[in-house]
Amino acid sequence: MSAAPPNVPDAPPVVEFRGGVSKVFNAGTPKAFTAIRNINFRIEDLPGRGEFISIIGPSGCGKSTLISMIAGFSSHIPPTTGEVLVRGEPVTGPGRDRGMIFQKYSSFPHRTVLRNVTFGLEMHRGELGLSRSAMDDLAADWIRKVGLSGHEHKYPSQLSGGMQQRVAIARTLILRPSIILMDEPFSALDEPTRLGMQRLIMDLWHDIHATVFLITHSISEAVYLGDRVWIFTRSPGTIAVEIRDLIPPSAGVDPLHMQESPGFKQALQAVAEQFTRVTGS
Ligand code: ADP
Image 1 (cartoon, rainbow, N blue to C red):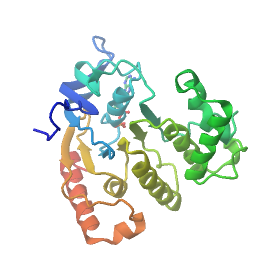
Image 2 (cartoon, helix red, strand yellow; image 1 turned 60 degrees about the vertical axis):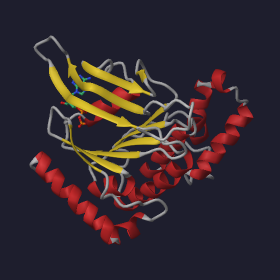
Image 3 (spheres, helix red, strand yellow; image 1 turned 60 degrees about the horizontal axis):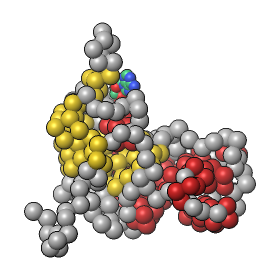
Image 4 (cartoon, rainbow, N blue to C red; image 1 turned 90 degrees about the horizontal axis):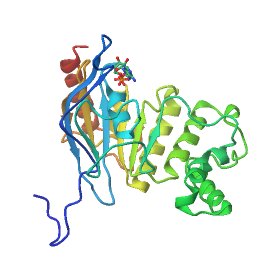
């Protein structure tokens, strides 16, 4: 039992898959395809902290399917079996509480950096009640946080891949989602840029206290950023292993320094061994 103060009800989990969640695409047709099967987990609400879950597994095993169900994409909900709950409620569509960052730079080409970053605020203007100048101030703050000050009036095509991904991050985080879904966000970037993005995510994450699901092909990225690492089986995927206790804390530690630490190397080796065992690769 959790130690909630008297008379304060336990908060529901931030995300819960229960009842053996599966997703069969084109169910009932000759093209029926089971993408994920029998997935069950609870991510508890950790006030003022959040949790970072890294997901690794072979291509096509259903990792994107899992986070698309949390995102509430119409192509992915409802589940075929089981229930997908966010804060205790079944997911029925996308929401401002959930932000997604994809591998492909998802900025609008015809909007400047500033207007890309204000986009979400404009979309939700009615609820947020922000004036144009308040939106611009907030956007300027996020543009600074992601290291793009001075580039506000450029268009995405004038930026490098890493800078475009910084725009996507600012555009998503400005809405302060409590759940962030990242689908191989850095896999198109070169190694130094990728390390820079890992530093940035680590810094920002501790600022916004969200629950993060990160799909990555990089075991070292999974271990550096994650509090826990899930390893998926081959298709149809399910969570075969969760590695948690071995993962060393990395808050405030540079990824390059982290890679040198014995605890990190040990975790990396354990995850790599489990990955090979689970996937046979
Ligand atoms: P991963 O992210 O692990 O690479 P995905 O979740 O993208 O895997 O895909 C798992 C499987 O589900 C793939 O074979 C893919 O073709 C299939 N799939 C994904 N989305 C759809 C969809 N909307 N309709 C039909 N099949 C889909």
